[in-house]
Image (tube, rainbow, N blue to C red; front, side, top):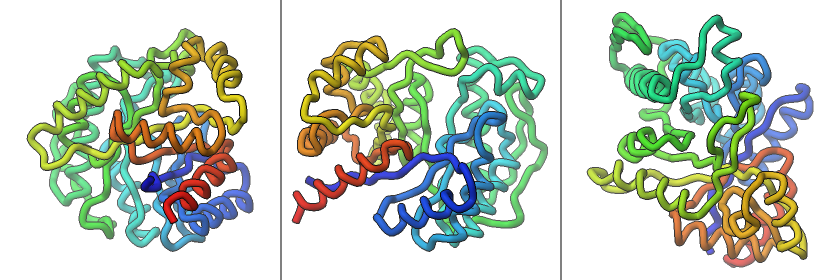
Length: 310
């Protein structure tokens, strides 16, 4: 089996452990170090990533994902371009529509409805990508405003900064099929009443529909975007069935969905590898993002896959 591309999403706790993590990931051959974007409750992604870039040479660096609901296109493009400069061309742009009401409220706003968040995402994504490409951008709202905005310096080192869409909205999955390099699927459904957590959307038929939307959007392209899954739970165990029932009770879903989901690694490393092969076959998933808490499990899975391909 071809080894999937794997990246790690993490948050800095202190300088020493953060730089040690970056070096560890580079040495182990991970694709990128990624940082979530939740203003007020998580690290500033581009500051953290610049620190990681300073102690590595090959490791990709990017947010996962930047919050289009509160990030302004010119400021975001400037952050990405600066990160690309200081990393020697290793930055990625990843963007989602946002979901947590408090992140709008703390900035004096109100979370828009779904349609409003979709419109804002498209305006920000298209403007940011145009700015990174050297274009001049004017936006006349109401979702976003800019007047002859341009990014004259710093310019990105890369000719084209890779772009990832993260989310599950129907309209945006079609849009991402037409425009993204990577579509990051998270298995997260409706935002729950606490404003932070989500329903688990792990049913295989739901994922079938999401992939179909991506492919519809990509119909005019030579190839559809790569597909990536965010691992929500990883448990290496000799009793996958029992673990799946525990996880299903926690996420209020079916154990069968847990066992088949690309968002959960459960079982022996051999069983997990077999599941990943099925994810590739059924949904075209060739990339995974794991959180730091699951890094040891990811190391074991990657070691197994590397041995199996020799």
